[in-house]
Length: 203
Image (cartoon, rainbow, N blue to C red; front, side):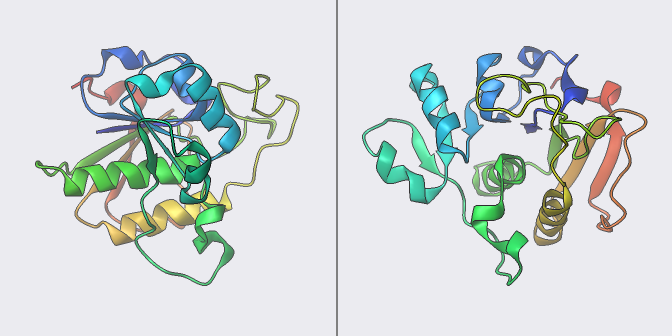
């Protein structure tokens, strides 16, 4: 199981080489075909639909948007959050495509005919570039921020991913990234593992 974010660390990875189940985010569809595409933003949903991406792939989005796409095939609601909380980062509307893509992978891995223990994750850079600008392969393109903009504060993503690791202790969350990437200090769960991108298997 491979979850694919759009951080610039994955730029050199040829995703077509992977034979496992792949879950991607947003504009990933422009370059690769994955069976499961997560788009929490309506603009990204429309963009993927305009490209007929839903013909062969499932597109997951917020339940509140589904009425707008009720006549479109292969549209699916995002899974419910596996916990309840009172903070802003606990509200589904404040979850973006990255954490939701991991949750979708966990849902598939635990509800499928065969349990998948390892959730392999790439392109989740979390932080901005070295000068704290936008870190995204698709920056300066339609529906994305300009490269000169400051990076989004990753605090919510960090908390949300940690909560998923707590809720799914039976799964391993393996983040493949660059050598200089720092694991958030708040990630205490033993099932969160950091590895080098070069060690990622294509199986």
